[in-house]
Image (cartoon, one colour):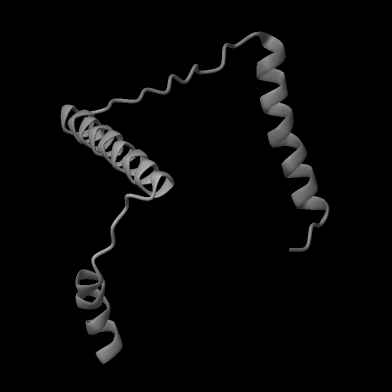
Length: 88
């Protein structure tokens, strides 16, 4: 973009108008931001938190079983899950 004298002057005039308004004490519009969370979103958030709590409890149980040596892995279930990927 090329800036020549005429654009420079018009930009200065536009900027001058804004600063003169501020100097005159004309109040600027106050903007208020609002956030509304619907009941459905709140319900979904509650479900998510409940699932997270259940997940953390399950992980803690698994950690304890692994640490104590009582964790048992069923090889058949692992093979069932891996077989479709291996056949592709």
